[in-house]
Every structure is written in structure tokens, then in C-alpha cells.
Image 1 (cartoon, helix red, strand yellow):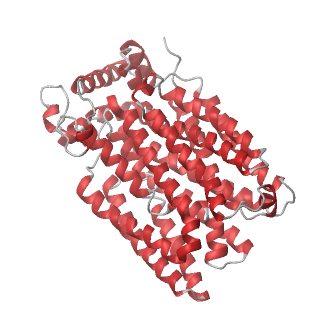
Image 2: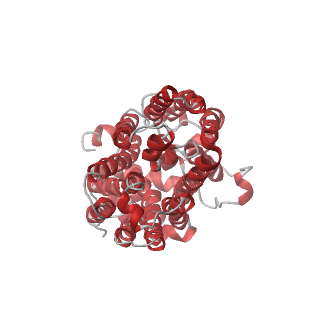
Image 3: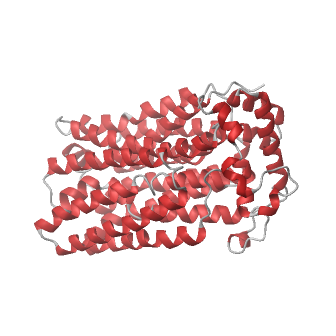
Length: 485
């Protein structure tokens, strides 16, 4: 018999894992230009600085790919999340005690690998232990909100430490990441794994016990258990072939779903978000021309805005569906980013201030749309047998594209100036046609009814409801557990 599962503890444990991710995304951005950091790292040049920052991103890609490998599904969602948090703690200790670029990069590589484990399996763990369809999207999306909170908190802590002196100015903010990783382990440890994982590992008795703990209603738990087993039967023999990623002939369209998720997340992180938040203080201070203190305040305000927007987009993601949020986001972001590029190109003091306003406008739109929605989409549309692979590869696209932008960004600034932003403007525009022509609306379906979204024939004779009934297929389930969740 597995340990008991408390969905609330699982949710908060994974949230702390995402706080750790956000903290790392923000903490270096506010200390790179401080005298203490420059002294400890011996005044690194632009290329070295880019490698210090971007090593975390490339390592996160490696962590995601590792967690997405075929054999990794034997481990389970819970173990991957806790292992990732433990590796992050080791990496943080090394980073906070660094006195050379090599040691700092080594520490950040470990943090990144651990982060890859957490962010690729955490959303799956939450999605598979959430009791209601209506709450699944918001609860997964809010993970990104907590990542944004971590970024905002790190920036404000950095700002506060700018009034201190000595090595504590950057070492203590970096070390504080341990708090979130430790909380992640403590909260996840007492719990069982996802019920879907137990069924996937041919341990249905344990899966049913966990389902009963989630729903507190044996009849409903049995209904969901039957649907999980039906889904697994539909996916028997559905192997991933390389050619299927280009022309998918399978019934469940597993390769198509993974491909769509990878491209979706990749496009999201080529829109410029990591470039903006890793170098936000530098952008405001060096490229827009704001005073150092004003640049720090603007950075903190921008990250706070991102966090608020991510929560808003997650809470209301069921209004209109995933596609509409993404379509509106791409359209409005394109307007703000194109205006930002044009104002930077003008290069006057007045246009620089207007460029800062356009950047805030872009963040205001991105935060509730392209920040949380891709996480929600990939965590719920992947088939059960390949869910860990699909989400892991989707998240790996995030880190690979983030590495590309964060590493190339400072070099691009140094060589082509404002023109580097044209790259990001292009991908903000590309997002609209991609979502419109390739993505299907997943709102209102249980995880076990996603296969029917890609092939209606799977609903026939399987005991499943038809795709047209997706919105109402879980009303009984929601009435039982909605107030609990």
C-alpha cells in the first residue's frame, strides 16, 4: 500500500520547486553589476557573463531531456521532483561559495539540472493529482505564477542588498534559493505518487487507493480508474516513430501532440522573456539609460507585474480557452514589441522612456497569456503512456531557446545594438498563425478524454463520452470534489 496522498501538499511542494526556478531566473540579474560580484568574479567580460547566466539554462535543458527519456518513467513523478530539489540545494551551496567563474558555472549547472527535473515532472504531478477538470488548468498555470513570484522576490531582495557592502550583497541572495528547494522536498516527501503513474506501471490496486484519497468517493474513483484503463488500452502499441513527428499515422496522434507542445513552448521562449528578465536591470540602466536606482526599482516592478499577470491568466484560463488567450497574447505582444524596437532605434532620451513603457506593456500582456498557458496546454494534452516524454521535451524546448537568447543576447547587444530585438519581434508575430492553425482547444476535458480530441473514433465502443460532451463529461466528478480542491 502506498503512502497517503494529499493533493494540497503536492501542490504546494511543486509550487516551492517553481519558486526556486523563478528565484534563480531573477537573482543574478540584480547583482551582475554590483562591485562585490564584479570583484569576486574578476570583472568578467560580456561573453563570460553570458555563460555564467546561460549555463543554468543549458543545464535545465539537460535535466528535462533526462527526465523525458523512456526509462525515466519507471521512477515516478514524486521522486523526480524531490531529486531535482536536492540537486538544486547542492548546486546552490557551490554557487554561493564561489570565488571563480568556473566554480560558479559548475554550481549553476547543478542547479539547472535539478531545475529541469522539477519543472518537467512537477506540472504532470499536479495535473494528475488534481480532482476537477475546472481546477486542473488554473492549478498548473499558477505554477508559473509562483515562478514569477520567485523572480520578483529575488529582484526586490537584490535591490535591498544594494545598500549593503561586501560579498553578502550577492552571496546571501543566491544562497536563499535553498529555502524553496528544501520546502519542496519536505512537502512532497509524505505523499504517494500520481494515480495515473501507478496504473501506467501496472499497479492498478495502488492507483485505485490513491484515486479514492483524491475523490473521497469510491464510485467516482472507480469511474476514473476505468477511464484510465480504457485510455491505456487505446494507447497499446502506440510507439513513437521519428517519421510520425512529420506525418503522424497513429490513432492517438502521440507524436503530433508532442511536436505541437515542443514548438509551442519553443516559440514562447523565443519571444524574449528570458532575455528581458535575466538582464532587466542592465537593459534599463545601460540600454534605456535610466539611473542605477531607478533601473533596480523598474526591474522589481516589472517582475512583480509579471507575477500578478501570471496568476490572473491562470485563474481565468477557463474563460475562453487556451487558444484565445494565446492568440490575443501574440497579437498584442507583437504591437508592444514592434513599438519597443522602433523607439530604441530612435535613440533619444524621450524615446528611451517611451521604450521602457512599451516593455512594461509587453510584460502586462505576456504574463497572463504566453507565460502560463503553454504549461497548461502541454501538461494536459499529452497521452498517458508518453506524458513524461511529451512534457519533458516541451520543457526542454523552453530551456534550449532560453539558453540561445540569454547567451546570444549580450553578444548581440555589443555587436548590433537595438537590432537584436527584431529577432524577438518576429517570434511574437509567428505565435499567432502557429496557434491558429495547429493547436486544438483542450479546455473542459478530463485527461482520459484527450485522445478523443485527436481521433473521435476512439470514443466509439470504449465506454467513453463523445468529444462533443467534453465540457460536461465530468460534472458529477466536479460536484463531489470541487469544494475540496
